[in-house]
Length: 529
Ligand code: MSP
Image 1 (cartoon, protein in one colour):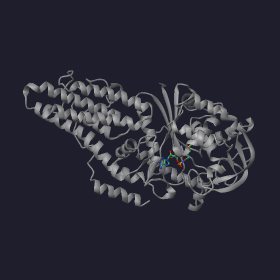
Image 2 (cartoon, protein in one colour):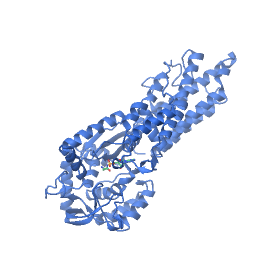
Image 3 (cartoon, protein in one colour):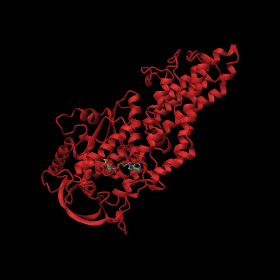
Image 4 (spheres, helix red, strand yellow):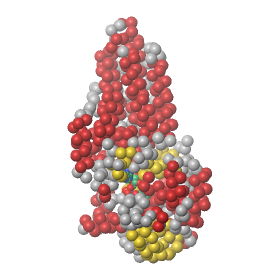
């Protein structure tokens, strides 16, 4: 296991407000980053905005402002959305920042000088929305963009090209030698069968039909085409090519850093084919992993601004809290598969997993501790009741399975192990029946052991939930009387940690939601977009 992590999200287009699909990708990346930090790894987490391109130029024009003003305004919304969702990114890169633009120009010059980029003419099928050229085979007889299904049109212009075929053998070798590079594995086959086998075209890396981009120094009527500009954010953010490359050395060049890009299925091609080639051309190491998550659908269609079926995360967080939204995104949709946003399941998840299971476990336990032990957690005395051993084993196996799943980016699975522990602890209450033990003076030791074991189970569940339930798990730990210092992953295995701790006032973590009212509320939000 490497000691440091560099984890990135795609940089989002500030062409309009972000929706819950974008929030999904960033939240899951955040959960992963937090879980690594929690376990003591050094983690650098990057997100940002991809600010150039025709679409933004057009949207700005329509809004009657300059492209820079336009993106400044939208990016403000990105910052506040990430604040609202408690995203713990260490940096936010904007491709209009000088730290990026200058280096992109240098990268372009270097590639040009090396003969990786050449000037030619492009004629192809161009999708304005995706800002991508496609081949005849890809657009089919209906001339439809294979990514967004909108009509494409023939376009021709002078353009610079990146020689993909020069780097293709290296790429295929890299795929073979690094079977974990692209996951889920089905994505690698998709790359090979859909894009590589039919014949990979050279990639157009400049445009002359719009001006909102980074000018090519050698030929300023060209601006750098958006994917060469966009993908390099992952290294310019670390200071690559600048006067201070310290972060770059630490989080990119150091072999002890694991580099992980998280991205949506719609942009796999750019990350899995061209990005490794660009890195090859720059003689730089490639990322260790690219994890492709599925898309969040709405009513069986991809959620997108242009289809008008987007869910705005703001009102959801405002009404249900940040933890509920983060939890739903991480737990309901298996990370790596497509999923659909469903108001009914949203409410069910919160009620079942958070209010009825986790919240209720805490509440019941604190109530019993107040009633039977004056609000003090009894000390650990080993396995006193015949059920204690099983709960202890469950705690240990939960930690192990959770870590293994998280390391493999199986975030949904990792969380479900914590749920299992919570359910097991609730069952332990039914098995040990503390209210019966309390009636018998000779059972005092057993009752004390039950309370201690429950406190430990809640403690472990809360620490493991913490990367997801960023506020509620802290509240639970507070109510349980755990000091800030003791809210520490390294102390998970210490069964005596909570001995004689005085608990605090119990308060419900998650109010139970009325399904009829709430489903109607969420539906009304969706109708408004
Ligand atoms: N700017 C490019 C990415 C450049 S990365 C070097 C881009 N931006 S985007 O804003 O259109 O989308 C970025 C990412 O948002 C997608 O790849 C995906 O990760 C995420 N999602 C956008 N819509 C989504 C869903 N409906 N569901 C899940 N994720 C979604 O592409």
